[in-house]
Image 1 (cartoon, one colour):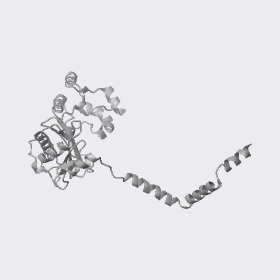
Image 2 (cartoon, rainbow, N blue to C red):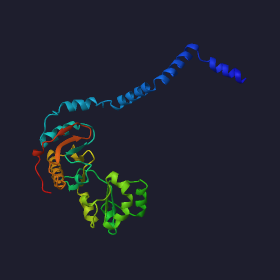
Image 3 (cartoon, rainbow, N blue to C red):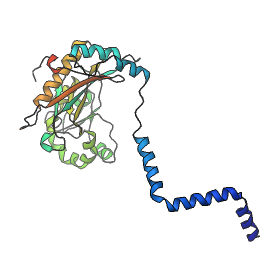
Image 4 (cartoon, one colour):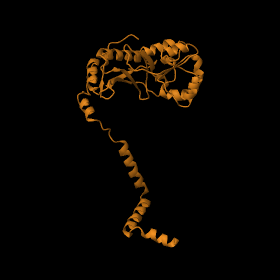
Amino acid sequence: MGKIRTKVIETAIEPEKLKKIEELELDKESKPEEEGEVKIEKKKTREGKARQRSRRYRDLNAGIDKSKVYSVEEASELIKKAANTKFDESIEANINLGVSPDKQEHQVRTSVILPHQVGKKIKILVFAEKDAAEIKKLGASVGNEEILKEIEGGKVGFDKIIADSSWMPKLAKVAKVLGPRGLMPNPKSGTVTENPIAVLKEFAQGKVELRAEKVPIIHTVIGKRSFETRKLSENLASIITAVRAAKPEGFKKELIKSVYVSSTMGPSVRIDLSSLQPTEK
């Protein structure tokens, strides 16, 4: 019976098809490098495929002169017009810096209280030895050993973490979890403090952290589509002033190379920085 089954399997494929299969197998053995090259080429083609934008986006983008640098008033009007979705889109600023992000001394990190709150409510966690009742009253969560263990396990459900110095040795154990998320308390951003209540109130009043990414670019929200142009301009001016004040010591070049603003779902517009009224830090 075993021999009969073998014959059935062998003859189940038509002779012509069997011949083609054998030829393909021989071809693979004789040209392994070429086959590999073909596969790599296909992968490159897929990875290099151009991003397809919607007709809505292309139409909006066509109304913006990419070779032009707009005043903050002109840019705000263009961006607000482009934010034509059904929800109140956020207006974002992208600040391109001239620093080398791989150099530790070129790190740019600071904070600023915006003149006009952007309307985004954030979840704040505070690690402090006292004032637990006041922290809860201000809408924040109080950190403890149990939450610390959750963070160590990778569970982080907060947008901002504030701590006093007594908690920093314990938080150092979860720096690998919080660091990549930009949540590790830091004296430069004011999130390591002996007066966490005061810092908590500042964030409630519209304080935002500004931190350069590896690119290096600072991404931050300056308002909503519903904001008046004046409010967007004043928020952006405050951010630019704070970034310039955080210029690394010894850095001789111009810190800010360019600034673009855009809505959540719309194209970007380059800002003429000279059109911004400087603010006091």
